[in-house]
Image (cartoon, rainbow, N blue to C red; front, side, top):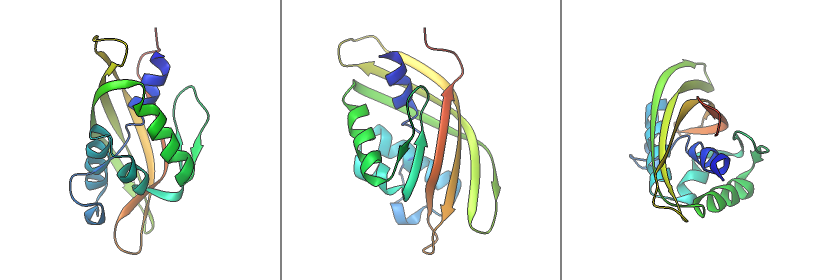
Amino acid sequence: MLSRILAVGWLALFSIAPPLRAQQSSKDALKAFETAFNERDVADLVALHTRDGVRMPPDVPSVKGEEALKKYFEDSFEFYESAELSLKEGGKEEGPDMIVSWGTYSITVVPNESDEEITSSGKWLTLSAKMTDGTLKMKRAIWNPDAPAP
């Protein structure tokens, strides 16, 4: 159960403050993911990925494509009553068509069957494509906690 919560934590890797179309920097995309995740907005979370986007959560198989991403986020949100994700960008390298960015995360969740908060922190790495409209969409996302699950 805790590993699912931690995977959800990095469900948690990127969401939405400005409108999705306004994401022109890696920090905008990061804030967009964080917001969509904290609001449990599955449609926005999926929209932040390319059609062939892949998430690589810890301890479970990779999740590829829009339908699989939608199911992954929906299933993940069923496990907890509330969650608060915080993402910080540590750096990035930018090319003409892609941006690789990395940083740290912290997530606090309250599982459905408990009132006890569980907090996890770790690191993440994403590869985002620069779309023709100027927005960024995640192609690949991977994360893992700093400490092993108890």
